Length: 305
Image 1 (cartoon, rainbow, N blue to C red):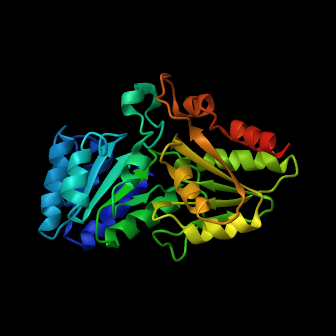
Image 2: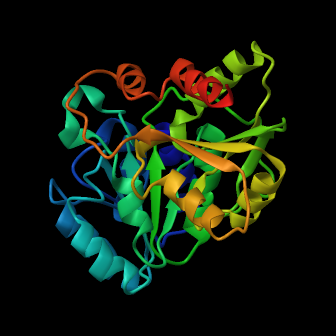
Image 3: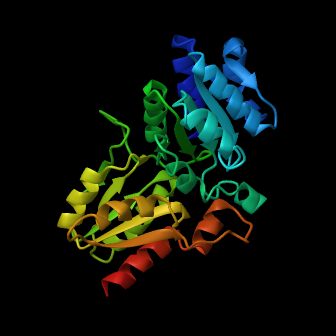
């Protein structure tokens, strides 16, 4: 997703000189084509995320469309006050980009894990929260937030994510995307965890269970219409996210269901109000916290007994 984002932004920036990219002193290997071709639209703010965000807000209030770029939770948690006060409050045209949502940087420990960022960013008024599930969604999301006026958060994987879609037509912020239609169970996924959801669905199919599957590249604003429609036609909804359950994607779905008079029951899969004290690669940590394809399938089968 990282390379797709940079390539897409580069093409957009060549056509729109108001697009600026500000990095927190990293990503130079992948960003090199951008700064070499568009040096006047690129800034290295150094390892100073609070300054990076405030500079971006100032540029945006002078008419620029600014993308800030860093890894893990650095572009959100380290500079949250600046995002809230300088960007979101003023509806500044700043797009905050995280490369490495969830356990992408799992081997570097909890300081580099982005497992609370969706909840934090979702809580800020008027901030759009995007978590694409594959390269096609990442490209479409980048184009969409570039057109959107206001503060946005784009949560990306680092690379190697499986492709869900051949192409996407009529991509919109705030709209979920159907992957397949089944019966009884619906699985909602946001972000790069979709590859585990796909494995889980294949395992369920071997047991004769064929869920409806949607990806939600937008967590905020959530697609309440799809949630209500699916909840009325299915016995159970399962949400999957590489994130803490408190305030995350599953919580956003639960908020919609709570206002319905009757609905499908909900099972949320993610981290249970905890930090990771483990160190390892992304696949290992997903499995340890019950988010691997096998463990997602096992949890669903247990609920159906």
